[in-house]
Length: 438
Ligand code: SF4
Image 1 (tube, helix red, strand yellow):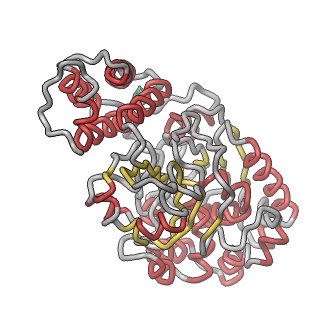
Image 2 (cartoon, rainbow, N blue to C red):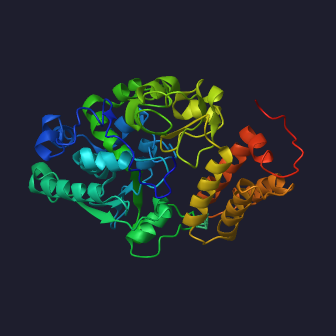
Image 3 (cartoon, rainbow, N blue to C red):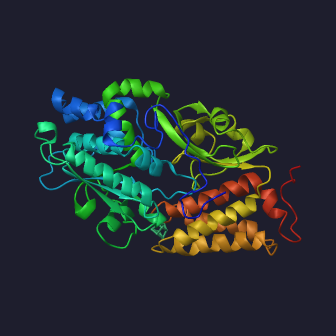
C-alpha cells in the first residue's frame, strides 16, 4: 500500500546488509557499539595518517559512490565542486528529509546506526574544508531525530565533533534540525529555505548550492545513506567499494521493499543484484498472488510491468534502460489484485497535496491529473480523458521550477503506456484503442 505521509508503519525491522546495516539489532546503536564495529576508525585514519582533502575526495571518486537520495549524481565529483579557497563560512547539509512514498531507509539508518552518518559527515566536511554542518530530518520521524540528537551528544563528548577533533587542528560543529513534514523540503533548495527559517519552497537554479546555498554561502548537500557509505570507503578503499557493485554503480544500496510481498522491509544488497533475488529476500509476492508491476525507485519513478522488472538488475543503469529510475530505492511491489487506476489516483492525490504551489503548471496541473483520474476511477470518465491526461502531463513535465512537477507527470505517462486498457475499461462508452489484456 502507498503511504501518503511518506512514513511507513507497516514495515518489519529487517536489516539485511553488508556495509551500513551489518550487525544491527535495534539495541547496538550507541557510540561504544559503533566503535566495536570499527566506527570512527576512518576519521581517525584521515586525521592521524594526515590524508589530504584531495586524497579523501579521490578515494570517494574511485568508489563510484553515487548520491543515494534519488538523483544518483557522483558523490566525489559533487564534493570537488565545493570552492576550497572560499574565504567565508561554508556549510555541509545532510538531507534526511525522507518523504518519498515507499522510502523508509534513512529513518532506519538514523535510528539504528546514527554514528555512521556523523562519521560520514565529519569526513565529508574535512574533505571540503567545512566547519559547520546540519542534518535536516523529516518532521514526521520523531524517534530517528531523538536518536540522532543522542548520538550527537555522545560524539561531542568523545571528541569526534567540536574543536580540535582527536587532538588535530580540524574543527567541525554538527547540528540536527527537525523539519515539519512537507515532502517538498526534500528538494535541496527548499530544504535550505526551510533550514533558514523560511517557507520551504524550491529556489530557481542556477545558482546551485555549491556556490549559493545555506544563507547564500557555498553548501554541499548529500543524502543520509550517501554519508553512511563514506566510512566504509575510507577504511577499505574506493576500489573495494566499487567492486561490491558493478562498474558505474559502486557499492551496496538499501532498498525499501514494500507492497504485496511477504516480508516488507529494508534490504541492503550489492548494486547489480537481480530484482528476482531482492524479491526473494522480501519473501516473494504475497501467497496465492502473482507479480503484476513494480515501481522500482519511489513513487516518482515510472511503473514497470512484471516481465520487464524481472529482467532487471537493481542498479541505476539497468533500471534506466528499462525506462524507469532507481531513485531512492523504494521498491513498491504490486500483485495481480491491484488496480492501476486506483494506484495512480492515490499517487496523483499525493503530488497535488504536496505541490508547494509556486509555479502554475505544477500547482494547477497536479490538481487536473488527480481530478481526471478520480472521475475515471469513479466510472464518470469522458471519452477525451485519456488524451487529456497525456496533455496535462505534457504541460507539466519540464516546465516547472523543481522536479516535483516531473515526478507527478511521469507516473501518469507510464501507467497509461503500460496499462491504458485498465483506464479505458472504466470509461463509459469508450471504444478501446488498445486490445484488452486477458
Ligand atoms: Fe513548487 Fe511544484 Fe513548482 Fe516544485 S514544481 S516549485 S513543488 S509548484
